[in-house]
Structure formats: C-alpha cells, structure tokens
Length: 465
View (cartoon, rainbow, N blue to C red):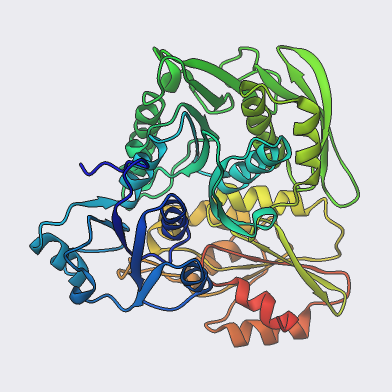
C-alpha cells in the first residue's frame, strides 16, 4: 500500500475532491507541502475554496487528467471501475488509495490520532471535541463531517500532534484507521445495503476497538446493549459513560449525567458524575438528552487529554452546534424554521423529542427519506418516530447512490404513518410542499425540515435565503 509521509511530500490526485471529507484531506496534504490536484463533477463552494488555496481542480472526470507525474490517486467509494480516471490510473500503474486508506495513512503522522465513531452523533461529538481542544489552545488538526462555524469549514490544520476525525463504519472504512484514542457513541442497525445485520455491524465495531494500541484508550457508551462484547479482552484502557448512573450491564458508569434539566428553549443542564462522585455542572446550547450523551463522551476525552475541566465546560457552553444539526434557519410569519440531518429512526426520535422542549404551538416535520434500502428496512420504525410530530409532510425518497426502488415510495411510508392515526401529507415536489406550508403553518408553529438529502432547500426557499 502507498505510504503517505509528511517528511517526503509527493503529488496526490483526488477523484471526487469536492466531497466534504475528500476536500478536507486535500487541504491537509496541501498545507503539508504536497502537490495536490483533483477532479469533481460540478463546481461547489468546497471546490472553489480549494482553488483559492492553490489546488488545481478539474470539472469533469477525464482520463487525460491522470498525468504521469502523479504519485498516487485517491478515490471515493462512489468511484467505480468504469470511471475514466480510474481506468487511466490502473493502466498507468499509478498507486492508489481509497479515501479511508488515505485518512488512515495521514493518522500515522500524528502522535495522538483520535477517531470518533458510532451510528449517530459523530459530527456533533467531533465538533464538541473540536471546540474543547480549540478553547484549550491545543492547536489540533481537525477533520469534521460537517461545517463548524468556529473554524469556518470542515477542516483545520494545526501544528501539534493532535489529530481528530470522524470514523464511519460504512463499508468498514474505519478499519483502515490507526487511532490511539477511539470513541464509540452507539451501535445500531444502519447501512443495511452493506452490512448483513446488527451482529455484522457489532463485529465491525469490535474490530475497530481492537485497532487501539496498548497505551491507547477506548471511550464507549455504556448504554450500548452488551457493550462488553465490544470491549472484552482489549489491551487498552476502557472508559464507559452513560446518561444513567449504571451501564446496560448494571455496572457503574465511569462518567454519567445526573440532575438533567431543560431551560425554556430546550437546552439541557446536568451535573457530571465521575466514579459516582458529583463534579462540575454543565450547560449546553444544543437540545436533547442525546446531546448530553455526546457531551459526556467529549468530557471523558478531554479528561484523558488532561485538559482543565473548567475549560471543557466553557467550550461546551459556547458550542451552538454544526450545520444541519437542529440548526436554526430563521423565522417567517412567526413560524420558526429548524433544519436537521436526522435520517435514521433513532435520530428522528431524538430530534423530535428535543423539539418538544422548544417553544411552539404545532410541531411540523417535513421529512425526506434517504435511500430506498434504509426506508424499507425501517418502515415501521420511521412511522413511529415521525408520529412524535404533530403534523408530518413527506417529500420523495432521496435515492442517493441507489437505483432500485425496491417497490416502495414515500406514499408507502405515508400510509404506515396514517395507520398509526397520525396526520401525514405527501407531495411529489418541493414547490407543492412549500405552498402547502405557506397556507397551513401559523404564527407560533415550529417547522423542522429533516433528512440527509436536499430537503433543507424547502426551509431556505420559504425564508428566501
């Protein structure tokens, strides 16, 4: 496998350089002195930002872009063997890496690489950790799966040996990593177009945990059922955390939250308990108990790094979330519009439960299902989760990488929701949804656009932004 060496910068070409992760990795290498170039299908704010940093970006993927002076080509998982740049790379015998392999290679160049994994909450927790490290003046390198306003993007290149990244389980990407500290936030069924079942997913997280060295540390959510199956026999230190004082296996959690309360905007406050002893009080500026859980993981990590707990508390109090995570978009006609990335039943439940504590008359949820595979696998769970809203509006399923509809549509989900006695509407176009909302939402209502696709455009169109 090609080895990335920061002491010997080479020429690296990215196929799909405009992706949120690929663009960040490209920027890290460019800052380290590598000659970086790449291609993407269309122009975007991310590609334009790379160009401003002196990185060459080609729009359109063509074989002639792969020149003989390129030392290594990096591909996203979306690139297939019929891609002209892939064909040219192979024909020229140029070494190549997957995005995950490159990220793993980059991690090797840092003394303290930190990987944050889990079915849900990776971006928020990585952002919380980032805010803490920045507040503590540790000068870290950060790779986040979303836009963090504090750093004005998804990447920050630091000068120390601290490196923080999200670690996604899809296609077992995180098994290419080399972390010293790992976090596992939760383990649930998802990405069933790749994994066989929950047991298969749990096995991948077990393999991820086994990557940690003897002098490393695993921070794991003790609320994960039978979490000891993941941690059994590990040579590294293991720290558990839980929103309850005991784990799912009845043992005391190392870190827990007690006296959880919510202010008038739904933001939680809690007392940190460490080894069953009350410690500091923490106030968050992001809603929901799920964010209390995320904060516990971030606090435990900060303690492992020996950071001042007062600095940790101040950073979390200043953290207002990342783009598309219960993000306030604006108010029009007295209707508050929030956008959220939730696309799994557990995430939807967490978001809509958090919204119950947010001031509102009627809670509207405009949901865009993401992929046919996920929608079919969790049809009944989606129906139950969405029923937490007062009124549900469905957009068409966002296909993403899929072409097979599996015989379902948003109308299938609409019927499942209506069968639970919940009011649910479906419209095939965003224009129709927007017109319906303009006619039916009233002063004091809370409208959440939700999904991993482009559903945020509905709220932005309503607000004229």
